[in-house]
Structure formats: C-alpha cells, structure tokens
Image (cartoon, rainbow, N blue to C red; front, side, top):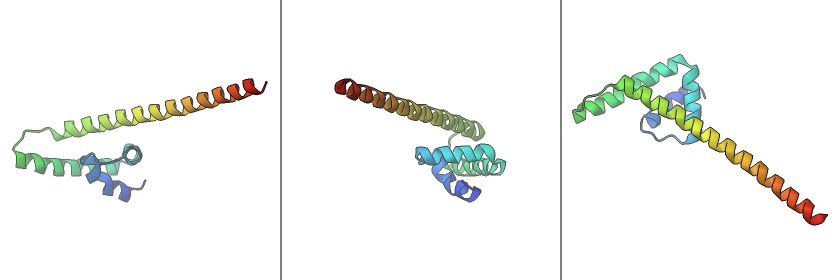
Length: 106
C-alpha cells in the first residue's frame, strides 16, 4: 500500500468500515510510515473532534485513537491466528483422508 491509498482509507478506518485484508494493509503501512501515522492522527482529531463538539461530549481523542489502533492490532493478530489454525486443520484433514485411502487400498 502506498501513502495515497492509505489516505483514501482513513475515513473508512475511522468509521470502522475496513474489511480484514484492507485493515491489515492499512495498519502495516501506518506502522512503517510516520507521515501517514501523523495524517491519521490529524484526520481522526478533526473528524471525531467535530462530531463530538456537535454532540457536546467530552473527549480525549489521542487516547481514543491509541485505543482504536490497539484494538486493530488485536483484531489482526486474532484473524492471523485463526487463518493459521484453519490452514493447519486443512493439512491435518488431508493427512487423515490420505491415511484412510491408503488403509482402504491395503
């Protein structure tokens, strides 16, 4: 993902509309690009700040953004572990099927 793609996805990230593959690429790019991380900070502060001011709510947006990024990191780790487990289960199932076929043929 390049910086332009990242910037286009910021509103969807803030609105929690990114699917897993896009979210993973978004987060990985943000971890490696300080400029994009700063752009995310700015857009989050502006978009959420305006919304909160209209609602009249108190807020700590820096803390909320850090929480959201931590939640994203956990979600990516969970999905990655789930995908790994699924692949391992497919491998085991294939082994069992091969074993059954060999057993039947002998």
